[in-house]
Length: 92
Image (cartoon, rainbow, N blue to C red):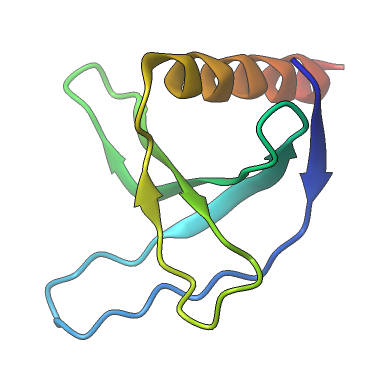
């Protein structure tokens, strides 16, 4: 799987006061399918104390900047591979 790291400033519009604030951890474009992806977190943790991380696709050329849920198991696996790559890079 090949991908390009990108650096998009995404704004998550929260019209509801109870909507969590998300932090963008990474954006990238998949070479194979041409889609742009964002990996983000709301800072919450699961039962095991691991940080909750979410992923979605987006269109950087759209004025709407709508985040779209991942549709296939292949996309989920690809995002997990990118997270593994990022983890390896951060460990040196």
